[in-house]
Image (cartoon, rainbow, N blue to C red; front, side, top):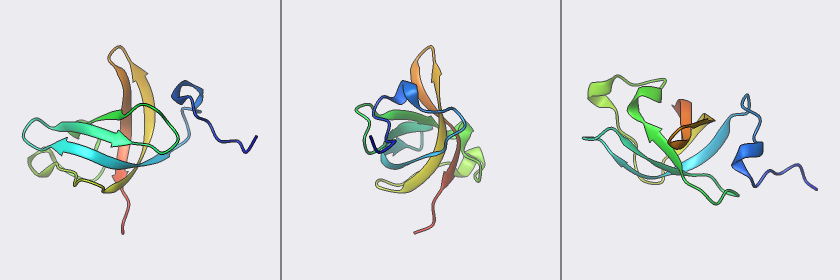
Length: 86
């Protein structure tokens, strides 16, 4: 096996994942990210952005991001999200 993990629950919590923004609603402050190789989309909330205050919190469709993933009572969510420069 190549070391690739396809079950999000098997991801080491210290590992940073990369993904692409599927959509993000700036007014509501949340959206979802697609991570290649996983079947579920990951929830993202403006409070986890490392580089942006609330009044300017937004992500663009197809924007590349990196983050930690954690499981909450509502499902999988991002933590410590940063944008990747193109």
